[in-house]
Image 1: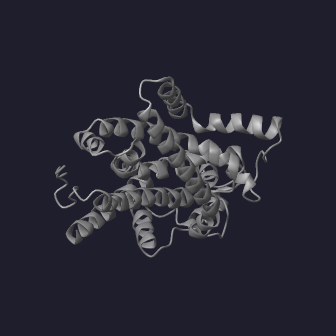
Image 2: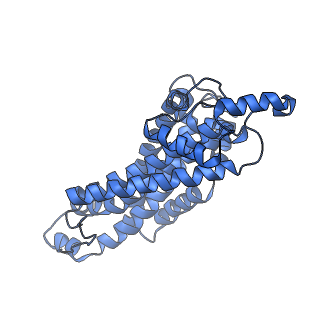
Length: 313
């Protein structure tokens, strides 16, 4: 286990280095100016600004300086908000995005597990068909479409919830519901597939022969074993929610990092784009690492050292 953890940490560092390098040079190829009203600035003013932000240096020197600064936890200064460090800008906007992400993950996963379980138990009935329909719908329709529909009916038409802005828990309900559709659909799909297979396995038949009730079969055997694939997709789902929140946050005017990411791209705010890319990548890599570790505790048959799955049942 210890050897595996150190090896994964090494891979994580290499992966982050590659991501930083590729993103840095791709941003240098972006057209346009990072300065607002650049067309009104004189050549000397642009030269002074470039000198201030180090953009007159050769590309290789800018790259080297950026790597050194990142190593020391310095992500530079935002072009959009002068004199504001990128790390401070991200930290000030991280709260709303994290709140929406975890609310959507918990609600989506919880309802998805229930929906997938019911669908598997009532396989090939109208209940299964209905649950599968909603799972496909949640997977096929983009979250911003759900966002607009929810906003129209629950806010504009029926006045049940705030339409936009960020001023308390009630303002987070609509964006959370819009974001929760994708994890709900994914969880229901994986849960149904895994549960159907488990309910037809030999050890379930043996438990039935011993007199276990349907509820005991689900609770003691099927549910726990079905959770492994759910945990597998949890990591990518968290990152999907954070990246998917970019559009949803803009629709609901939520001051999160997703909204800031969109603004940074439209204004060529290179340091902020780099900082947010590093943040998103770090979360994905770290969550994937944690989930791989959790496999061992959930299913001891899985070996991290060899990557093999020792089937003993």
